[in-house]
Image 1: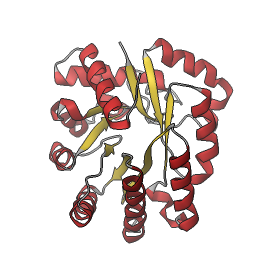
Image 2: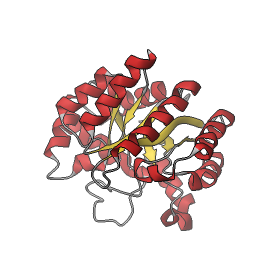
Image 3: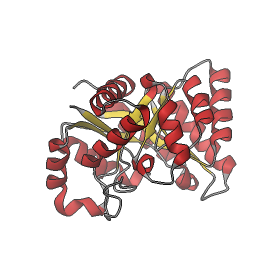
Image 4: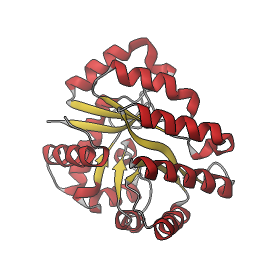
Length: 261
């Protein structure tokens, strides 16, 4: 059984003492590929180094919406330059809107649209962070596609919204990725979403080191090997085998990110 963890943050200090052991565990769990996301440019060098250390790791470059105040032309050029020059870059992100922890919507929107333009120029998918902002995000994406005539490919990562909102983004061409939150006892809305999302738009992730899934929720650090628990729970919610979920999500990840296993 092969699994792909489509959203990790392995460059964080919490992984540095034992990253080789973490890798051994994800290999033992059947994780054959990982996509390393990015929050802001100071991470570029460390993420790139890890991606070139491990053949099974691809990465993204981008600016998180909670860091939108950092945006300038130099950051835009850094993203464009690295994504253009390194074949291990498979996406732009994570990017998007977060109105849970910030209220600078207009600034976030401008930065989001600037990164959409970079992704479009390079024909790369986007990794989208969306928190308490699904209607606004839908509107931005619709206006972008209408004004440019271009369809943006990408994934709504660590999905936390409703089944209705899922349909908005699937209709816009996006994949929906579920993290360890889908295993949480009180996450009824997320579980309802996982049960109904189209099979050909389903992805799984850990978002490690955050959001460790049940039965590892009490641990201080999530890690890629635990994506198997996400797959198992999604399979249970959908009345499918974990092998079927693994095969479908692996196929979907390869299609979205252009991966060759």
